[in-house]
Amino acid sequence: MQELLQQLANGVAWGSIYALIALGYTMVYGILRLINFAHGDIYMVGAFTAYFIARAMGAGVGLQPSPLLAAIVLLGAMIVCALLGMLIELLAYRPIRRSSRLTALITAIGVSLFLENAGIRFFGADPKFFPQVIAPKTVMLGGGVIVTNHQITVVVVSVLLMIGLTLFVQRTRTGKAMRAVSFNRDAASLMGIPVDRIITITFAIGSALAAAAGVLVGLTNPKIEPLMGIMPGVKAFVAAVLGGIGSIPGAMIGGLLMGISEYLVVGYISSTYRDAIAFVILIIVLLVKPAGLLGRNVAEKV
Amino acid sequence: MARRALLVAVVLAAVVGADWAGIRFLNPYVYRVLVLCGMNVILALSLNLVNGITGQFSIGHAGFMAVGAYTSAAFTVYAVPPLLGAWGSGGWPAGLAFVVAILVGGAASAAAGFLVGLPSMRLRGDYLAIVTLGFGEIIRVAILNIDAVGGARGFAGVPQRTNLAWVLAVAVFTFFVIRNLMRSFHGRAFLAIREDEIAAEALGVPTTRYKVTAFVIGAFFAGMSGALFSHYTYLHTNSFTFMKSIEVIIMVVLGGMGSLTGSILGAILLTAMPELLRFASAERLIIYSLLLIVLMIARPQGILGRREISLRALTPWRRARPTPVA
Image (cartoon, rainbow over all chains, first blue to last red; front, side, top):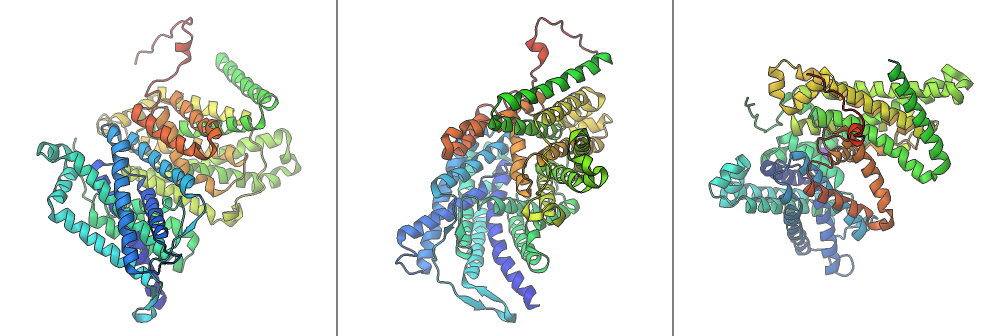
C-alpha cells in the first residue's frame, strides 16, 4: 500500500510535466491541425535557458538557492521560449500554412532536428548539471510516502499554470478568439478575428508552458542534454492524443495518466518496459474511443 | 515469357556486375554508402505504397524493419546451423539460406503489418499515425527485452552476408513488384482510397481490406530491408527508433508522395546528403535540417511531385507504347 502510494506520488509529479508539454501540443493542434514535432525540443531549450540564466546569476558558485532565484529562472526561460516559439511559427510554419498536412509535418520535423543539432553544436553533447535553485528537502506525507520539496514545487507550479491557462482561454477576449479559431479558422477570420495574431499567441503560450516543464524537470532530474526533449515530446503528444487532441482538460488528464502508469510499470513490472506502456495504453484507449478520452467524435460528411 | 526471362537475367547480371565493380574500383566507404542507399530505397518504396499510394499515414516503418531484421538474424543464427551444419557457413548453401532468411524476415514483418493494419479500420489520419508510431515503439521495446536476440547488448554473431548485389537485387525486385501492382486492378483500388475513401467505398472497393493489404505488403518489403541490414552491420534496437521511421517518411515526401522513382531519388539523396556534408563536420546536421525546411517551403509537393522518371521519356527514339484502353 505504501509502495503504491509512493509510486502514485512520483507519477503525479512526473505526469504534471507531461501535462504541461501536452498542453502546447494540443493547443497548436487545435488551431493549425499541425503536430508540432519541435515542441519537445522547445522544452529542452527551456531547460538550457534556465541553466544559463541560473549560472549567469551565480547559482552553484556563490549564490544561495532561494525561491526568488527559482522564480526568476522560470520566468526568464518562459519568456525566451515564448519568443522562440513565435519566431519558429513566423519563419517555418507560416509560409507552409496552405500546404498539405504532411508537408507541415516534415517542416516541423526539420525544425525539431535543427533545434537538436544546434543544441549539440552550441550547448555541447555532454549532459550538464542543472544548478540547484531551490535547496532540496524531503517531506513526509501521510502513509509513509516520502516526496521531495522539488516534486511538490513541480505539482504546485503546474497546477497554477494550468489554472491560469484555463482562465485565460475561458475568460479573456483573446482566449475566446483562440477557441473560435480552433473551431473554424475561416469563419473566425470572417468575423474579424486576427487569425495570424491568435496563432502567434498560441505558439507563445504553448512554448512558454513547455519551457516551464523544462525548468521543472531540471529541478527534479538535474541532468540536461540537447536530446532530452525527444522522448518526453513524443510521450506528451501521446498524452494529448490519449486525452483527445485539441482538448485542454484532455491534455491534463492524459499527461497525468501517462506519468502515473509509467511509475506503476517501473514499480511493479520492470523499468525496461517504461517506454512501451504509454503506447499500449494509447492503443487500447483509441480502439475503444477513437477520438481519445475527451475528444469530440466528428461525424463524417459525405 | 522469353523476353521476361531475358530481362531478369540482364538485371541479375547488372546487379552482380555492379557489386564486382564496386568492390574493385570504389573505396570501402563509398561502397558502404551505396549499400545503405539500397536499403533505404527499399524502405522508401515500401512506405510509399502505404503513405503515398494508399494515402494512409504510417510512422512506424522502423518497427517493421526491426521485426524483419531480428527474425531473419535469429533464423540465420539459430535455425541454419542445425539444418545445414558446416554447409551453412559458406558457398551456395549459405547463399540459399540467406535468401530464405530474407524471406522469413519479410514474412514475419508482414504478419506484424497485418496486426498494425487492423486498427486502420477504425482510425484515420493523425490517430492512425500515432498508433503506428506506438506499435513501432512497442515492437522495439519488446525486442529489447528478448534475451535470446541479445536484448540491450545488441545481437552479436550474425554472419555478414549482405553485399551490394543482394541489396540491389532486392531493391529492383521491390520496385518492379510495386510498379506492377500499381498498374493492376488492385493498384487502382489503392489509388482510389487515397483520392477519396468514401467515394471508393461507394463504388464497391473493399477499403478496409485494401488498407490492411497495403500495410502487409509495405511491411513485407520493409522486413526484407531489415534482413539485409541485420546481415550487414551491428544489430541493436537503437537503429530502429521512431527517428528511423521519420527518416523514411522524409525520403518519401521529399521525393514526391506516390512517385516510385521519387522515392528512389529521395532515399539516395537523403542517405548521401549527410555524407556529402561531412566537410562541415559539426554543422552538417544543422545544415541538413535547414535544407529540409527550405525544401519543404520552396517545393512542398516534393522533388518529383506525383510524376515519374521514365526510361521512355529519356529515350525518345524508341516508339511510344500504345496506351492500354482502360
